[in-house]
Length: 154
Length: 127
Length: 113
Image (cartoon, rainbow over all chains, first blue to last red; front, side, top):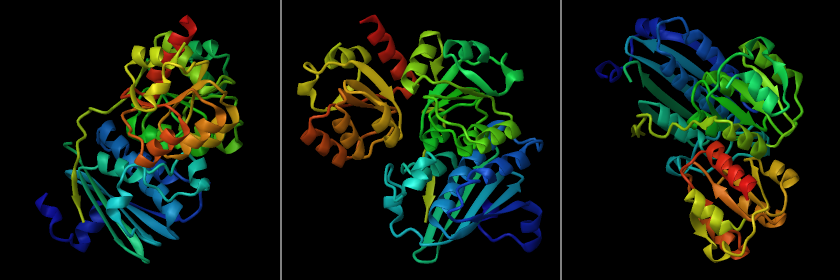
């Protein structure tokens, strides 16, 4: 994906931005609603159902992560000619050891998260599994940045 | 198997989706971990779970899961029912535990759905 | 039915306490991933089928007197989990099958027995 190597111009950014969703940390009541909204907004655009499912899963896990661990965050959804891009940015504690966080089964979740059926240490792996390109960076004490690309041809 | 047959097999109550009892279901997935569902369940399956929160419904919606069977008589909140109605996910409710529910449905011919080898491979990790 | 017969019939791989399989009787089954639910509702002698791999599953199985734990979908238990299971004498078995399928098969075996 050559075009992704340089930053988008403002004009391209606005053109491909499909939605911005704000998420409040620790607000579990509506957890998952962004995923449902993202799914709805992708329907009827000629995007294959299997791609929409992957994006919905990625968004769901990213949303749960922000609610579970951060103070607040956003999920941005971009539709480009050849891919759907999900970017999740949060303000929060960040991830000190990304390798450890990606280890299946590793989790720092508390009971409120586990009661929802999350927090078993599978979320980041799921995001990685369903992404064609997966980028995860973090500034400890500041926040976490996730970018996931799902190619339309994939 | 029709959703109505699943209802009968498990003495289940239809909480949402009286109008969808004719849909055909051939596969099922049993889990209480939503990440497990998000990772492995397939579209069109029956989700058998002991969770009755809106997140279970939204998980089903994300994956185009055909219906949810809430087992072990788990109490239902109005928020759960509202979310299911809004997203059009049929809900059955049974007092049988997950083990019994899966066992009966398996004996009647439902198969498991697992998507371990559907071509989604390890992808690049850039940091 | 003893656990060894069941494990052999289903092709389960035993990761811990294989020496107990022959003498452990399976009286019933329980499926679930929420530890609080399993604590509240499962019975002694149950074989517990779960996707959880955390070492707390051993504590639950031990307290409830489960016959053993089956971990599904190719998930592998942590080293801590296996160490603890060894100490407490709880057989742990793994399978690539999904929970639905392995429960279906165990249910069938138990109802034929």
